Length: 80
Image 1 (tube, rainbow, N blue to C red):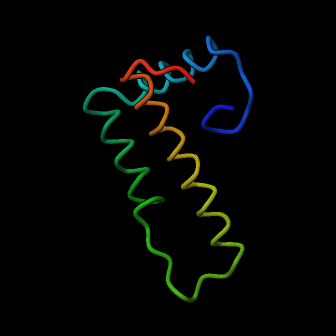
Image 2 (cartoon, rainbow, N blue to C red):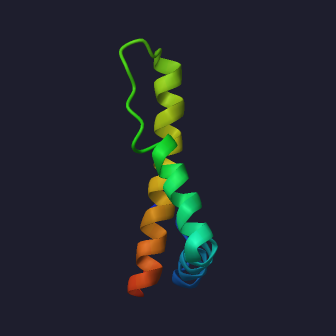
């Protein structure tokens, strides 16, 4: 399975990894990814958040984590 839990061919995985790495490359791409990380992964949830809000932010964190993992794989030339 891939980082997102969906079975794909190695070629499809490589293409997705490379596409995301390209989208988030350069100064603007790095800035955008840093922004996404700041509002998801680095966000601290206080005690007043209800379970639905927490589930929502966890989903967002998961997506940003997948993007970061795929970029790293593309940069390292790793296959799924």
